[in-house]
Length: 143
Image (cartoon, rainbow, N blue to C red):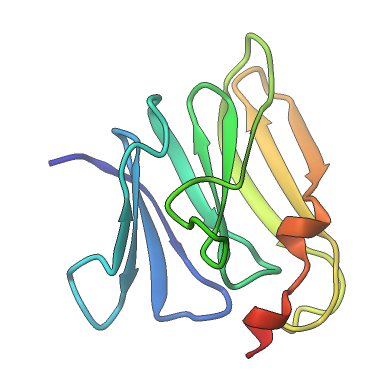
């Protein structure tokens, strides 16, 4: 059994949550069942630090690994089993925490900018703007 290192409830569907496993897997659960409704094995070869739902898009989530790489997933993409984007941050320091926030109207269907804040083991923090592709609600999510 792998250790669970992160849990995050979907802000748009509070009965759905992500569990991130130290060994590089992520699973999506419903509060109605103890079995995963979906699992992504091998999200990364590195140790997973956190998995976070997008505060702006109900079907998007992000996974941070200990090689300072953030992997973005979109459940509505053509291949939801793979990340739609991965980006490495930092050089020698390690990211120890990832938090996402939506600016503006907090209603799930309201437009707003999405930010990602990262904390590093050297005490530094960064704030990054999440791409529009991963932070703008889509027509399919509105249905």
